[in-house]
Every structure is written in C-alpha cells, then in structure tokens.
Image (cartoon, rainbow, N blue to C red; front, side):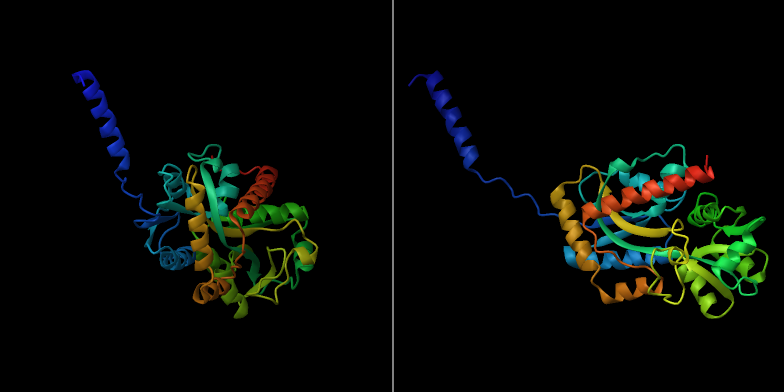
Amino acid sequence: MNKRNFAAAAGVLVAVTAMMVPLPARAAYPDRPVKLVVPYPAGGTTDVVARMVARNMSTALGQEVVVENKSGAATIIGVDSVAKSAPDGYTVLLATATSFAVNPHVYKSLPYKLDEFVPIGFINEAPILLVANASNAAQTLPELISWLKGRETAVATTGKGGFSHLTSAMFFGAINARFRDVPYRGEAPALQDLLGGQVPLYFGSMPGTLPYVKAGKLRAYGVTSVDRSPTAPDIPSFTEQGQAEVVATSWFGLMAPKGTSAEVVSILEKALNKAMQDKELLARMAASGAVPRNFTAAQFADYVERDHARWGRIVRAANISAE
C-alpha cells in the first residue's frame, strides 16, 4: 500500500472511530434554576401569588424557580427584559392584562411586541369593584346611574391609562355620562380620600376595597366580572344588572420569549398545572377575589387576543393615550 492509500485508509479509520465514540448526552431541561420575572414591586398581592407559584413549580420541575422583580413604567421594563432574553426556557414572565391587553393601546410605541412571546399557561383573573363612601345617597347601581346623569363626576384612579382609569372610562361610556379623572399614587391614598369623602367614586381591587365594604364604610355597586365573584357572592355583577359592556378583569399567566421550544413550553405548562393544584395557593387567590382558570396554552393565547381587542375598543372610545 503506497503512502497516499495508507493516509486515505487511516483517515477513514479515524472518522469511523470518531463516530463510534458516544457524544456527551444533552442535559435534560431544566438543569439549572429558572428565573420568573415579575414586573411589579416585591411585597404586593401579585408578587406574593407569583412567589407561591414559583415555589410550587420548583417542586414540579426539580429545579428552583427564582422570582426577580423588575418593576417600573407600567410593567414595561420587566416585560421588555424577558422579550430580549434567550429563548431557552430559563427566563419566563409573569404576564398581565396591563402588559398585553392595555399597554399596546395606551402607549404609541412599546419596546416589546406581543408576538415576541409564547404562552405557557394561565394563573387567575380577578374583577374589580365600583365603590363609594357609605354615606352616598344612591343605594343601588340604577340609583347611582340616575345620580351620575347630567353631571361630571370626580372619580379616583391610580393613574392615567391604568386599570381603574380605563374601567371608569368603560363604565361612564356605557351609561353615557361624564367623569373627571382624579389620579393618585396608588390605591391606598385613593381609598383614604374616598373614605374621607374627598372623592365620590373609585374602581378598586377586591383585596383593597372589600374589607371596607364588609365593615360598612364603603358601598359596592357591582363587580366587573361577568358572574359574581365567589369571594363576594352578595355583590351583583354589572352584567346581571343590565350593564353587559362593563366587563374588566385583571389576569395573570406565564409566558416565555418567542423561539422557546415546544418541548420546553410543554414542561413548563405541566409544572404550572401542578403548581396550581396547591390548596394554600388557591386559598390565597380566593381571599384576593381571584379565580383560577384551567386553560391550555392555546386557550390562554385566545383569551389574551380577545382581551386585547376589548381593551383596544375601550381605549379608542375614550381617546386615552399615555404619550
């Protein structure tokens, strides 16, 4: 065998031998901690629920799910950070109605786009309450609507373009009446002035308003879910009182950056489903008026699309813009 043939044969032998050497197995997902970005400050109701979900998912995944709070700019900072993360399943987002249904219509430009995410699964949705000081003469929603007609009414909100502001616009648009936005830096000062009689009306969260309703300090006129809330079964919904256009729920779910593999999304979806079976978590959500929904990732995507369209109509009708 000449040198050329020998070299060729040796090359073939080396290639065959290399093929026979087993490659190192790819580590099964997840092989390191998963980061859950929460676009709200630590300590609030949303953050507490997110941490409980993360704790339960850690057990299901066999890896720690670490909560990282990235608040600011109406959730935009946290959402954008996830949109720009690697689509490897190690960074996921606590997605909210504010981020995906409201902000795209309120802000003329956003650093993120809705199609930069893929849904993992749904966590819960919660209605809000229309409340007034208990001294208000209107005892029922029809009486309140009659009182609101023909005048401009000051309404407390937690900021222009926020849920309380947009729900106020939705309600006053439905009854063909006028309101004046009185923005506050958070729910606590809004409730303080409502209780003190400085402002007559407020659309507020269930955890924030319901204790005052039960104590007789505030009067509730309706919840913004289609059906009554299991947390407050004595308070009728706007829908059952003839105001079917007044439907507004704050919802939460998990999403991952676009490009995350279907296999990884499926693993996360199953872990979330297991996490949502925890009785302590369900009790905590019920106490805040939140209702879980057993949605698949596809059903969650459809839910987001419909909610996005509904808030678009509301924002356009009210001519609201944050920029």
